[in-house]
Image (tube, rainbow over all chains, first blue to last red; front, top):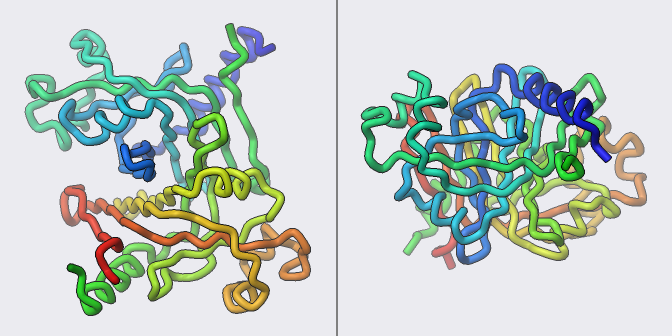
Length: 151
Length: 151
């Protein structure tokens, strides 16, 4: 069983791994069963409850894909640091204005020129079940962080 | 309909986009329906028949995942060049020693210390159906290359 202390250490480790990486490749399953990914800017660090949040347009195809099939993967690559991270989990749309205000950062203006006044803006919340990472220090031996066994 | 000339241009464009990127994040669907990715070294440029090849251990879990569910995604990130590529397709294991000799490159020794003498070595062939890419020059507006309509 994962203890609360271990869990906090895992969150801390994952935050450390993601430092300096701005975009993740967000992979979803389309209705025809094919897999698609697109770059998405992380709106915050990993939350202490093991969630990751992204701003997105509510009318986008990605939101439809997530509604159809909740399982997703977000991968992060830092070729310069030779660090690669895979985050597996389930995603859901959360249209919560308070949460949006909490997570908003000016860099997101590039994607949402109207900011939080954009009527079509929403959030995707990813509940992380597992993270795998590879880095050159560990000679690319895969390391796993599991979020499943913590209650 | 995609003409042969257009098709060649698409392959050329995709090769250009992947230049300087050594690793792709290869996403597959596990038996429980969850999505996992791992870094994989491209063993060659995109072939003129719209395929991409990777060396892998035949006994690895990734091969089992592909046998169970053929749809995959390979994403490529170049944060320095602000370039992100998503390749959707189907994957299959091809244990062809001649093809392995054709594709082998010395850098792969890091992953396969025994080289082509490794008895557990095999190839994953990805038949590309669609590629999407985003770059800063196009202000991250998604661009699509479709490989479906060429016969």
